[in-house]
Image (cartoon, rainbow over all chains, first blue to last red; front, side, top):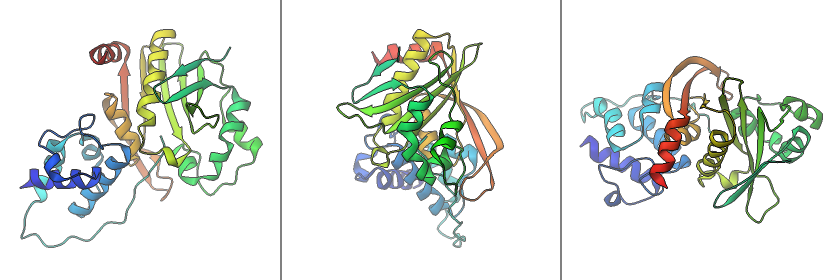
Length: 94
Length: 185
């Protein structure tokens, strides 16, 4: 289930159908996974988790497997909704 | 003589300080650009002040390449590198023209820059330390195969909030770059 959720988030970020995003989707492999898509993915992950990603989590994100790993501890239908954190991102040209 | 590099879509021409100031002064009006380049926010730059904050690029140890789409005279961004006597290059890039964000500019131009540095200078290691919250910058290093060497805790200040923020060290060694390029040749 967490892998499918990861594929959903990646598909939304790169603007493609989930059917085109496999378990092997990754930076440098998946069409449309550019710098802005990556920013959208990180922001969507933070929204899904209800918290900012830790630095080690941010730099770990390169593939479906990595996104799944970040999502996994939080997949629980019974969990109460967590407060949405203030967005604290730096979008930069460099 | 200026250094001229070409990629599939862009030309990169080295610039000295005054030319770099002229070509990039328009970017000084953009807080996202100046903030992400570590130049602060909410500051109105005079041309002289913008000129003074640039380095004395000399095409030997300090490089500033203006990025232009082929067929255009307009500089859309800059690739910067500062090379130590020991052969270590610190990289910085800024794409001031937002129309080119998300278009793969940095991957293309940084590849050309690294090809040049590793082939024509004593550069043996290239590295950069973007803010972890600068997601496009982190992506660009990852996409080019840079190795994440560690998190620099509270190394900088987030330009929006003023709060301490972690940075990450990404590095590429010459032999790794050459192997990567040969693998894709």
